[in-house]
Amino acid sequence: MTRAPARRRAALAAAVTVLALGAAACSGATNTTGGGKALRAADLELTPTTAGATGHLGTVNWLLEDEPDSLDLDTQGSSAGRIVLTNVCERLYQLRPDMSARPFLARKVTRPDPTTLVLDLREDVTFHDGAKMTADDVLWSLKRHADPDMEQADEFENVKKMTKTGPHRITVTFKEPDALFTKALAGDAGIVYQRSEVQAAGKEFGTPGRGDACSGPYRLTRWKSGDSITIERAAHYWGTAPLTRKVVFRWAADSAFVNALTTGAADGGYAESPNTAAALAGRRGLHAYYGPSTASLALIPTERGGLKNPAIRRALSLTLDRTGIATAGYGGLVQPWATPVGSGAWGYQKPQFAAAQRKMAALAPDHPDARDLAAARKLVKEAGTPTAPIVIGTDASQGRTVIANAVRDALARIGLTGQIKTVPTAQFEEFYSSRAARSDIDLLVGDWYISKSDPMGFYDNGLSTSSNNWVGFHDPAYDTTVRTALRTLDDAERARLAVRAQRQFAEAAVWIPVAQVPSVLVLKNGLTGPPASQAYLYYPWAADLGAAPHHASGKD
Image 1 (cartoon, rainbow, N blue to C red):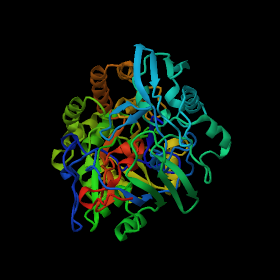
Image 2 (image 1 turned 120 degrees about the vertical axis):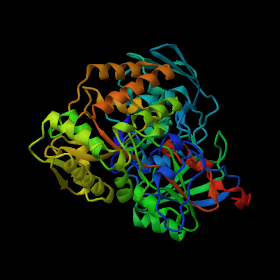
Image 3 (image 1 turned 90 degrees about the vertical axis):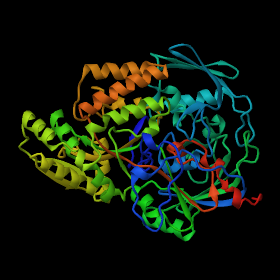
């Protein structure tokens, strides 16, 4: 998937807790807050990695926030399944902890012309049964991902043809140049399966009791539905062997997640809820790490039209108390942010994107003293005050409730009336996918992330033809900028275009950005190694997990 609302746990990857916290915090030490002290996002220093492990471990107990519905990411791309399988299955490209993407199962990649991509494959890769990975396996896997019924089909819409052009070579031909396709290959669109194993399993592939069909550092050994999933170090892995022999996954959410880590029932986990992450900060015996991600909290105007006028949307953005939201709604673990995509998307040209983010701060002030009520009220007066209340759609979760109340307060400050509509979480999730479900709300309190480390993986949401452009934003100049960027293979030039699209999107307030949240990794003291960034959804994080140097025993 190119993009997804971050909280749709049942169907989509819920990476809401993995947001980059700012340009100034892209490197440095991790933050540990002790004794229940309040977190301040501005004080957190993000780091994509943790210290390298040196010691072997036997069994590590790991927490997920949900049990996967399936371990076939083509049919059910949930974050829970992804966290498990990224250690079992490998991709043609690999998303690195610093959020850059590089060739992986493809040893070399060339572009003989702008619409042709040649993948020269590694010849030393073996699947878990010892069979060699072949170009036929790779081609079959790509075609499976591209099937219209599969989760990754949208990544192949610009693909004209995929063919085997040598014993270890695949050639992809595009309808027009495609700058983001290789980044998709670092995600689920690039997973390589052993064809014979998937076909033998048929419709049962990815269900409890079935094995994997992959080549990664771990193999799937057990899935007891309702209880646990176990992966073990692959006996004859073609690459570097992991330090940890076995990882057992169990699942718990919210307070149960916190309790399991606090009591020692679990050794680690990626905390997907910002409130859960805040509750774990400073707990005795644990260490929390904060890393960059692409996710964001945003206000998404709907088709109903209460915020149809961009001037009204800009006025709301100028008035919103983002600092208050961060403190009251998310325990200080989110940071006010001027764009709807986190800095984990800066997988290239980081200084250019960081500078652009700083320049845009005036469009989304991060402190009450910076809010310009006079300018906001002038915008409303010139636009014409809406007579009907602006209906804010939310559920009863703490964070969304705080945001909804802050929106209502901001609207009142500029002479408008806000009305909150609270629905059950299951009904709220329907807002993302169903126009009918959101037909009586004007604004959705949403969270979103993109799977690619490139801002252009988000800004196509503002195209006049996009199904996610609910408010009906239409700007030919914006459409031209985005479409040109998506065809631009040169990173520096694409970054320049991305910054332009970002500015156009923000000035029209197509979405109103609120905040971003760090990726949070929590480990028992003595463990180290996995990435702290959003890369954990696509990178074999358990392969780096082990004992810290001063805890190393040398045995597993």
